[in-house]
Image (cartoon, rainbow, N blue to C red):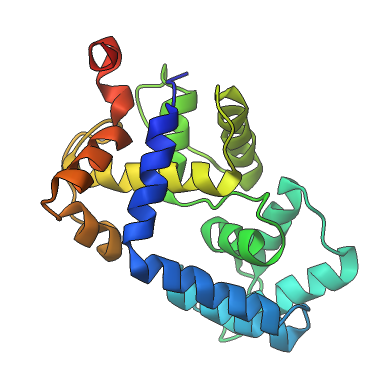
Length: 231
């Protein structure tokens, strides 16, 4: 397992505080949560539409997804277990000629679960998943592939519990995502080549030239420097 240092998480939190757009998205989602606390079809439709729009999760059958989530919660209640997120993520389409077609929306559902069910659920996306795999499964040469949210959740919490300092699910998520985006942008491990296709709000922060931001960015990748960096 590749160690995460306290400074890395602290630096990610500070970088997040420099991205006002990201903070406004977080505040908007909290307003939606407070305004629509239930999971009727109508309330769920609003939540699905907002998450899909703000996170670009490519849900094209918004009503089908909202109906599935509302129906499942009405049937089972809210279960704070990763298997429940997997159940929420599997949607059988019913409209527009796609009857019976099954879709898996793990990334979208993880955001919805984290925002509207419990912050215990970490958000899953390709960058965070790659960073979790990098830290937990350093022996794997290729990228660790997660086929279910439960597998990702298990490794995320294994990583969280391995830390020698206390932090929250959300702050660890900030580190994994922000450091991952910076590594992807710079071509640092676990990426092999620079890639400009990253979150545009974070890219603005990464491009700043000030000494303070450069020190924060260096701390984000502290694990790459090994023992020499700590001397």
